[in-house]
Length: 373
View 1 (cartoon, rainbow, N blue to C red):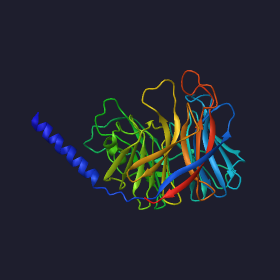
View 2: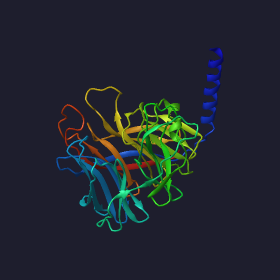
View 3: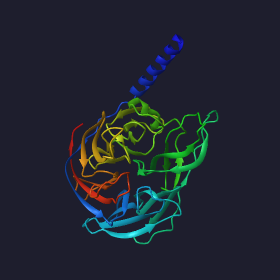
View 4: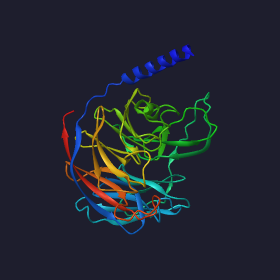
């Protein structure tokens, strides 16, 4: 027993020292100074999980619309507004599949608007003008094989790119799910960092048990990670925001294999974490937050934090409550403005259960101030 404890102590020491090998270069701090919000879609349905992007002369917002949060039948809607008048939203596309459609996202793929949504697998559609769209087809995402000596087993090869971000090198990245592991699985699991040159064909950069999710236990996280997002500091350090079975975690490191350094947040649930690098080099984090793990009802809010080289600070609560959040950022029309698309049910009575009531899509206009690191 003493030998085991000694070896375990050496392992923890080596693990801690490895984490300390990473030097995080300080970067500007982006602070929310004020905000105002507008409702941009309200039709009495449960509208949620929005993504936002500016492509050309328009802002695009995509979201899921259904009768309830857990409805088996849903559609993906895309609306847009001119960058010169972001109160004039109009519907420009609608997609559906045989299975539930969820978690849509939108981004600029080299001048084309690309929408991605999940329906058992990831589907995408593109548009050159924002009005005419291609028929949705599956993303070509590699199924990553475990190491030959791994005891990891799978019941499905289902892949799920929750976010897609363009990196400093111009390629597209996503820290995403890959496969559903079996109950008898004993090997290391975890999210996979994927990379793509064209935003359609994604290749894994490491195998299971590696990458940013391997570090979440440093900050009190547990499990293999769930939903996640990535961004980069001005010097190219990868930043990951990861939902897990404990409060959300932020991980800094050198892609794809580290070393990594993790920091805790105070947000239980941490639904739909989103990161955003501002024009001045600051980083914002947004996520759904619960005050504690076990609550009466579902008193969630959407929060926005300032990300620093030592963690997160100064959270703002965006006007929201109940079933909501799952937000997405975009640079605003003004240099000191950032837009945040999110959903919330705070304008409706909250019946028993989550997601049985309508929810609206909102756009928060955040005024940002930057300070030195």
